[in-house]
Length: 87
Image 1 (spheres, helix red, strand yellow):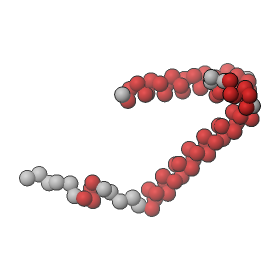
Image 2: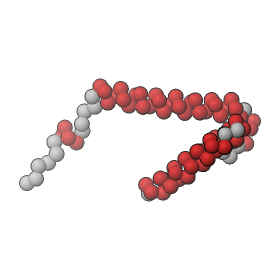
Image 3: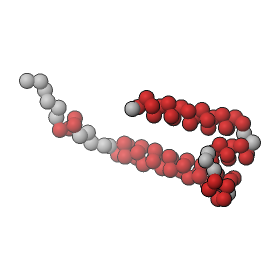
Image 4: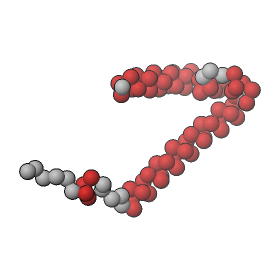
């Protein structure tokens, strides 16, 4: 009879460093999301933002960064392509 996985292998215990790493990752992602949101709102304003179909691109165009628009577009394309691969 083959060895059956033990309970410890099925449910590994998280150490304190794993918990700290998860909290730091979540905090970093939240801070980055809030930073982007505050930046977009401060650049576009609420009325322009409510009518925008692509707020990040509109923000980059308004700031005058053509390179930023290309990066946003490439990121959107890569995200869409990556989603198609995961199905």
